Length: 468
Image 1 (cartoon, rainbow, N blue to C red):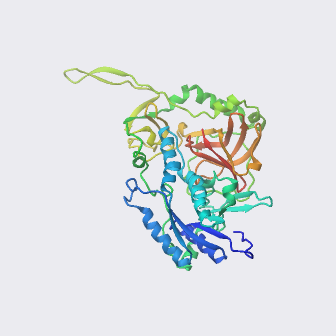
Image 2: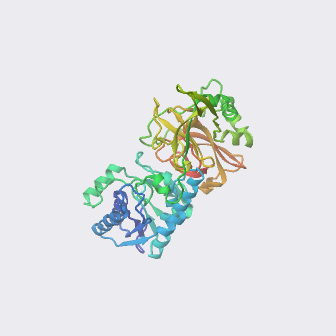
Image 3: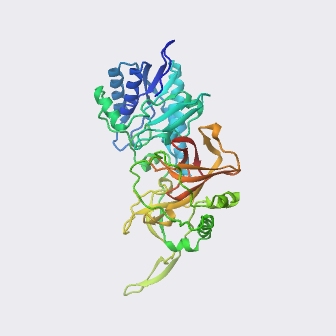
């Protein structure tokens, strides 16, 4: 982390001390480098009903954070931001899930709370900067423009969670451990005998804790039982949009280049960094991609939705030939279970479905909150799990580097990820009047509306947007 000129006065830094080892070491390093450091712990949640542990995890975190501050020898303050957190993060979560979309509360927490509401309070205490324990790096150019770079630890890079920050927010942010790997952070904490040295990394929703998401959402969203419908392969053979998309992809390919249609399954155990390697060539012909109309791009980026209807038939059963009714077999799918609300599920989800009797895992491939239906497919290579193209609405395009924003009609090659810890994916970005389109070099698994797509040039994060 770059040092500042301390000749006139010490730079005052507020560390967002969470009680975890990362923010603890961030505070330790700043203190050792001569900054005027103070710690502030923020409480963003009160209720414990939805947490898996059934208790107030923040109380233990606050206790550890206060001990860390005492050990380092810096002032410690407590601030309650639960009202702002509920209004600006949780209410947005509820609203998005009610629409069948998949928001990311951690991204929102950084944009709306840590580097906004929290920052404003820190400034009232005289802070020049706010520091956090994020694994990312910041560089400042001669003109004052801030660059945000991937963390040096490829297994812990957290730039994705900062993808909605502005230049103003970044100008007040410090990331002291961005150029350190996690094992070294643990070592430094143990060497300094910090109370958080052995503390496990936090999991779950930012500042809420490890939660059962359906239970959490049921605080506001009503449970209504609906059907789980499995979609068979025959549906894709007869769906006009799917067939058009596949034919369009074929027409865009460079001569002699094959195309895998579905995701090749590999557990996302760690982030794959660029490691200085050049961005590979797209399987698609650049001139053909550039020639796509706005309408064709929109159709290529349209997610598949399933309208599978079932009819009943009567039959006679048993010796007495009792008349009964049953569902007619449908070549496109079958009802394989029931759920408590389509809004509680997200595309790509595997756990919590309660659907058995399959040789391979079953995944959510679509949800319809209007009909309260969840659609699933069997196997990692199910066609409904994979998509090549997505669109970001013009109002949702966010540039971290505003000086590098794409003009309408511009085309670029970048790396993109649609979720934390996903390996960076080669893609072509096309800016059009009706949005930013991202055409991936390979099929992507479980693209869900409401997620953030984030794009990088080398190891620098340039911008992000909410998937339409």
